[in-house]
Length: 238
Ligand SMILES: [Ca+2]
Ligand SMILES: [Ca+2]
Image 1 (cartoon, rainbow, N blue to C red):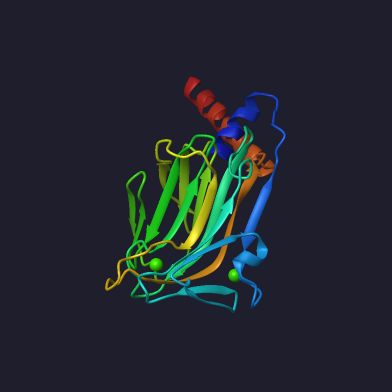
Image 2 (image 1 turned 90 degrees about the horizontal axis):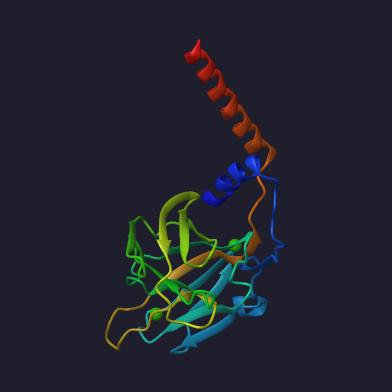
């Protein structure tokens, strides 16, 4: 993450100071048949009877062809979703939408009461949208991708697609006074529409973690860079 690289520079120049961290982690791995998210700390909120659900081969499947159905998995937290100095918030999930899914029926949402902003994300077969900041990615969402959001302050965030930084976004301006996240089938359509979806989730994880200390390798890279710069300067001077 960017902050990690910035921290390297800071620590080379200054004594290391890190705030006491309060790590938190909750995940759902879909690795045990018959164990659903609500069995491991997530709150299920279904409408219209909820989606058809299976857990098999490490994958949690939500499937429906009824526009009246939604089926989301919610976590309410306070300090668990609001990083202190020296910490960062992360959420990571590996997921795909199945062909025929309506745009943005499959969705992920984050809200923070420290700042009061929120981020709402949705998927179509070939699209990803972040509605607050207007970011849009074109991708084949019917194959598995790993998505990751990281934020130091729940104001700005970085979004990674399959391990690469895809864009830098921001939470919507303050409208809320609670902190929670949800994922799943978040959309409800009108009768007669085709607003429905199926999705497969390998895992969903979120939490607050300490900003990682720079590794010895990073310090070595920084020292080597400084050495090369000094050598170049000496060569130019001579
Ligand atoms: Ca899994
Ligand atoms: Ca739905």
